[in-house]
Image (cartoon, rainbow, N blue to C red):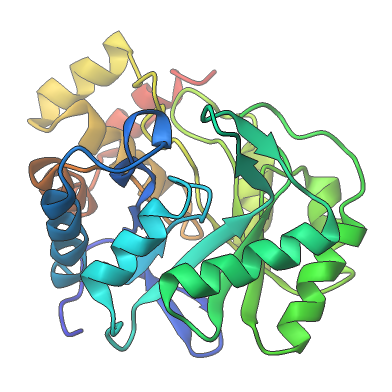
Length: 288
């Protein structure tokens, strides 16, 4: 890959640098992230367009679909180009009716890693995030047994690096006592600022912070202030929200998802935006 996106890059670990503007593949599955996509050809095209645009960071999980999204990634991009890094996560499964079912038994976590390897067509996963909490605030339960199981797979060469999703600062500290953590993926956006301190800690410790639902998720961000700033700067509210995250901290990497080529181009263009100080101050009032 020779294209360099605006927004810059982040060094996750030695030899692994990702574009700060990433791509979240969750929306490539069917409704409610379950079953096949409405348009498989378009899903494949969106993945290829993301990589052609210079995105080197794709976020996924085998429970998207389940397996559907990882198989799409393999169909679209295998053999994977040099410099492309796929970040996946384990810690949940899907019921037959599509319900999300937490699954944190160490043996099953190892099975989930192997399923990711199979469906992505890889021998080693670049980064595996342990999904501890869901979309609500994380609890403070110990994750030592679960993270230790993933650290064993890292020692075996099945995983290069480890991360966390849906965790507290205390849980991050506990995980770091077991193995290095290269990324934290928590709910965070303009309207959800509960992890401000954790974002700053990640920056200080060289850990990437990847906000999930950077645009509000299934309930898009709605704010008169956001829309006013967007109109003034002649950008979409979504672009402003992504640009704010990229300016919030050099450790932030964004992973907006879409199944639309037009929305993909719009998201990527957000990396070109530089928000003036008065706009940032105005936007900061949304989450406070």
